[in-house]
Figure 1 (cartoon, rainbow, N blue to C red):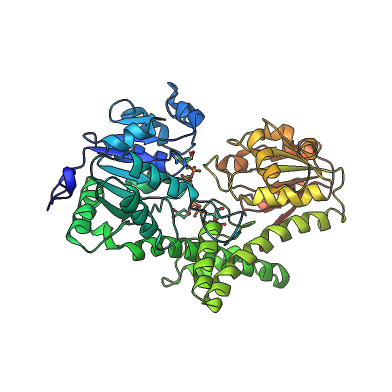
Figure 2: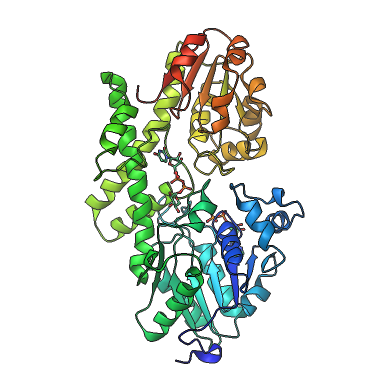
Length: 474
Ligand code: UDX
Ligand code: ADP
């Protein structure tokens, strides 16, 4: 079968891949593809000059994304067949396969504001590909997108291009941050959606052949485009729903004397339910769960499926409630006022082993406490003060100068906790468990409270040291 000048045919071998977007998805995914396929040239491009400079930093520990194991993968492949560049046009032109891995945040304006995904970055990519491409291309949607986005990409490519032929594939990423490299090395499944036409099937096969270098065939699933796009949203919605479900039960546990960890263990041993994603917490964060559910809600509403929309929206409402009630409990327990009290935060990232803070519960808990005029001092092993303040400024609850006055980062956890009235654990970093808690206790204001939003610490040990310890769901 002939597809324009590129002649994509069965068994066609991809030799050059370009990925637009060097973020949390594009960076690690392409690094692993490059490591596993040394004969394929993989070029990751981004408009963000600073980000690309960091990916190219001679000291591989300075790459812009912290993920366990990632620096070793980059060290092996970078300069060999993995390249990071701002030369977007050149990389597009050279590649046979182009991954679109740009951000698709929730819209903050116009129709669908607060619900729909903002597709302006995707559209810009499609237009850029159409403008630059001189040979046929396989375009792969990697970013999470609303169902039928491929249709829009197709329309732009086919109507604004210069006779070049395109095949569009959907290949959603299921990696979780903090375990991205592990997930990419041994994925539960790789999902590839494409057209049922012979050309579509050949494009699917070309991508299957890339993954088949290290992923067993039975784990590579091929579907039509729309099933693939929808599956990504649904997978995240189901995972988030489990967290909201157990979080709803955590509140009930606190009232009834049951212990949510015990309940989770008991129900998780039922093989139909399973033990994963049943850890109650201060609330889920991350760039995907909320965005994808809002997207699902928007799609359902746009088809008039209001009951479906309301059902999924409840997952978000429960999550918001969990974050707010954690902050409220701190205020209530500290004798109904935190004004001018020092509250130490352990953790700001949305989960351990990542420097990503998008939608982290810590941001919202801090916001509520700052509204009560608390002084928040944060220690996170991987997040900078600049990032924390950016996150707060983005909420626009108060002036930038006010945020800077009320929140600081500490470079040392003991300094963060010194003189504090309470400690709030917002991220489940392992190192928090290894601290000298006796030393921390001695330097705090008494009574010294710990609000463990992650069920992380040994409550009995802390209580024995004199702490007033509270955790979620017990
Ligand atoms: C998620 C999906 O897991 C991944 O497949 C998809 O590609 C992207 O979205 P990620 O957001 O990186 O990955 O992390 P995940 O491990 O799913 O955690 C999301 C949030 O839920 C975190 O804030 C985490 O702390 C919280 N969580 C998770 C809980 O509170 N309890 C749990 O039991 C599990
Ligand atoms: P994700 O978590 O989905 O990877 P990120 O925000 O971490 O999202 O990364 C997306 C990246 O895509 C950003 O670094 C951004 O600069 C880049 N990007 C967005 N639009 C374009 C574009 N048109 N061309 C090149 N890079 C882009």
